[in-house]
Length: 137
Image (cartoon, rainbow, N blue to C red; front, top):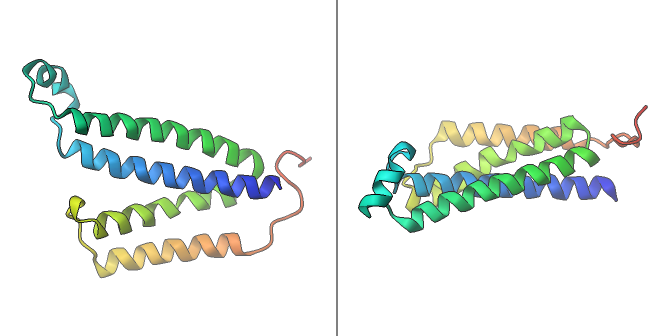
């Protein structure tokens, strides 16, 4: 049961960190540099919606870290860490497929993402040992 919980928490971390990356990209393309935010707020030239998305992305990062800590409790580090690589592929696929990001697919990037996903599947396809991290000697 704890291994399944660790897997779910690791995937939750992947979804949250991917969402955070996309949210930050979207928000930061609509905002001035962070060192100019106070001046922009005073001048009324800052887009509050974009700032809100960046703040929500920071919260998603925080929640992602909490999920990650839970995953580390229940999964071997090699498996848990490899699952984080899924976020690279997820961010690339979403950024390239959603028009708001104006990113493009390329053969080399797609091949690279496919290799990363293949690696994650390879690492996680073998049966895990019966010793959980908490019960290890």
